Length: 246
Length: 220
Ligand SMILES: Nc1ncnc2c1ncn2[C@@H]1O[C@H](COP(=O)(O)OP(=O)(O)O)[C@@H](O)[C@H]1O
Ligand SMILES: [Mg+2]
Image (cartoon, rainbow over all chains, first blue to last red; front, side):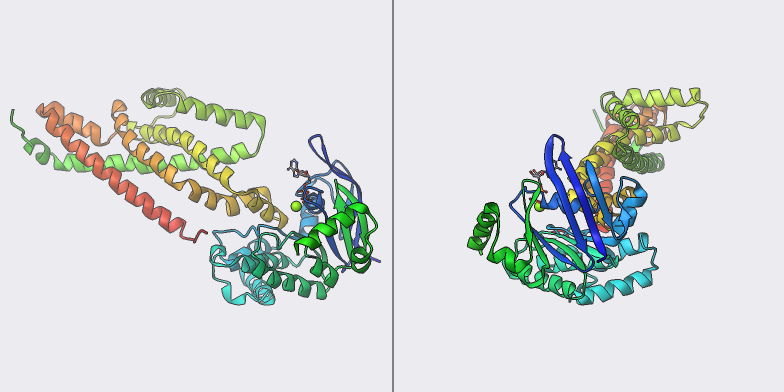
């Protein structure tokens, strides 16, 4: 089994605050992980360590064969392989949808403008937003913006995608279009780690669901067992709360 | 007492050239100020203690001393450094340096107002820090503070009058010469007031037009 992302014995502090405690996580190529847990449990921190948006105190991270350290070279190599989608979309407001999508491919992958545009149009079609390529982010709905953000990440042709609560900032009626996009991405074999509380999505695509609390991985299982028979009291309490809200 | 504006109308050519001189000082000063403003913020963002300290010291010194003193300082300091410039170019530099210090403060505020997510999205895409600043952060940051920057630049435009103290070529020095030749103080300064008002309004209009052109993307 080829592993795409490997995290071993990760310890992460914010000042004196111990944010990640002995995290061990291996994600196989093509595997889909759903990461859940109460707010403040360290889910964002965990996935942000993978592409070095956060630095760790100790432990080892290997992404697609690249061992991560603080050198720019290692960081570049890892970021080259990993796409990220944020809760707040983070599209660049002064650039059109197309410009958002070609910026990094041209700068980082050194594609020509026409190559980058061709790639961008392909992925914009793929997230079913090809007809909005010339618009600015502010002219799109939240759901459309998030789909553009997904396309923008895909334009780098990453080997893995990290999603940090991609539907949490959306109006309810737009959640589905984004989840559908993520499902189709999953179907195409993308390696994914998704921080989300969308349990329907977890059931549908996750190979494993991981529950975190207080900076630790408390429990992990296949979705069927995870939802049917959570082992830990904290997981049960969490699931009770989540399901009550839905 | 009778008013005699003929001394002013007779000198319309001098006044016109003086006005152009003032506009030259103002717009050159703004360009330099803009350059210093962005460069200063870039240096601050490197987060190295000595460069940051120097930039901060520069900003504080300029903002806490009178421009009149600053312009004399530049006027006498440049020759000591072996740089010989005419008074007008000296004035451009003094105006640029003064405006630059204020611009650093203003632009820094703009950069800080940009959500961290923008930078993170750029980094996650594999862009380097300097690319993120130049390509992602800078334009929205300038847009956010463009009104303050414009006011600062209008102030800079009016500050050009002080450059008369080193005999730079601009409107106030022209006015002073006409006054000295004719003793028609009120008429001269009444006219200068009117011209400066027009210069301000035109500059404001130009800056607004530049802003509309540079920041035409829609905002939510
Ligand atoms: N930049 C930061 N500085 C200090 N503490 C932080 C920072 N980012 C996150 N934290 C803290 O780390 C903990 C985990 O945060 P986070 O990973 O964002 O949790 P989650 O995504 O599960 O809600 C929280 O207690 C949060 O307050
Ligand atoms: Mg989070």
